[in-house]
Length: 196
Image (cartoon, rainbow, N blue to C red; front, side, top):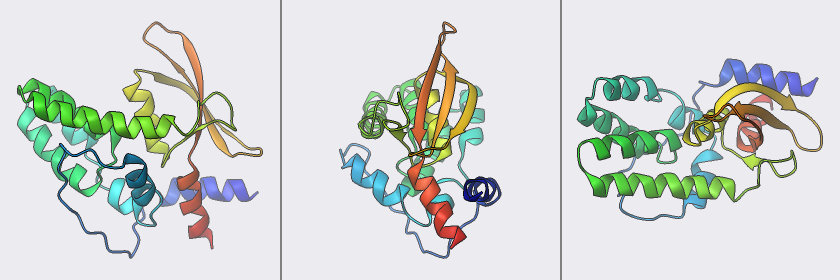
């Protein structure tokens, strides 16, 4: 029964903000930070939803990129990443946009951040079993991983047991099915805190 409360709460409160103050800072994308520390500090914070989910500019960046308005996509992405520097998909979009305007250095910077964040995520497990699931910060990050890996979601199931996790069945570009387990531990912890 408790799991159903968590699921219901996650669906209704995913966009709720907290009363914590968050200071947006300016990041130097050419630096190579401790990605694991960043993911833990931001991803496990009480205000993660207000910092990294509310106002996420994916559609605005997609629209700009589809219109080949690369500088607009870069401006939107840079502003967002200074607020939420651990957004894997926005780093991917920034890498593509920087390449399109010929800024190879900028593209490499965002590729390095994307790779560093993904490396930290895949170091958490192999995604083959609930016990070795990839630990993600949010449900959205599960979809971002699929996107970056070029996989399309076919189905998703919540698996309860010793480890509560998501099982996503996806297909690659050749139609081959792959099953990946994700453990959105930080997401569930935020929901537990809201229930208290």
